Image (cartoon, rainbow, N blue to C red):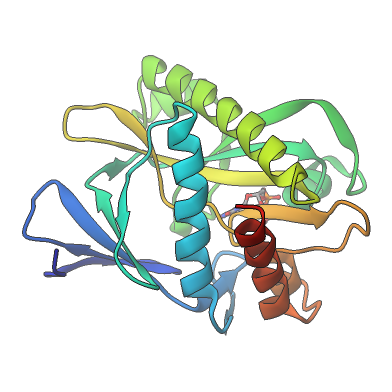
Amino acid sequence: MNKQAQLYEGKAKKVFATENPEMYIVSYKDDATAFNGEKKGTIVGKGAINNRMSNMLMKMLEKNGVPTHLIEELNDRETLVKKVSIVPLEVIVRNISAGSFSKRYGVKEGIVFAEPTFEFSYKNDDLGDPLLNDSHALALGLATSEEIATIRNMALTVNKLLKEYFLKLNITLVDFKLEFGRLTDGTIVLADEISPDTCRFWDKDTGEKLDKDRFRRDLGNVEDAYQEVMRRLTEGN
Ligand code: UDP
């Protein structure tokens, strides 16, 4: 399958058409952004790591009954995926307080929740991805109530599966963001990526951050952290 016209360039990926109208090629970049694009940089090797890691995780999720957009990895940075139209909701699941949750509610990072939290942001860079609830999403016509119920169930299933999977690699899954898409027939599938760009990973023993917070907060050793998660995933398989 070959790349045709570039359809879209986002902050971390490009999307291309293919000769098959139902398939796209996603190409992962090394570009990193944070704080709604205000902070920009490069994480060398990130594109290849996120491509491979996301595909490994999506395969594991598929095996456990979660439908995803994944078709097949084409090379280091490129993956063939099913064509979807993205539901403009950022779906965030949290197991432990961190990031914007801690800031918004004025609590320290590291509070372990008895039950995971679930929230939506409106995927809209111009507005800074504002938090919104189900009724807002419905009022704005972003998704139907059936789609919202499906997305919630799928996101919580993904959390259970990922949490367990990363625990075996001695990694605590703190929180993550998912995006969902509609196939041509309307079926909801997991899309976008699952990587250290979109998850918070803490080493289970030391609490060391192994994700994009190293870039956001200028903690150094950003590349090493991405490689370390990839190393554990590869060795665990
Ligand atoms: N996240 C993301 N993209 C976004 C916002 C958040 O991938 O545009 C991820 C982020 O990496 C973290 C989780 O979603 O794993 C929760 O992020 P939070 O709401 O705490 O926002 P942040 O602190 O990243 O601004």
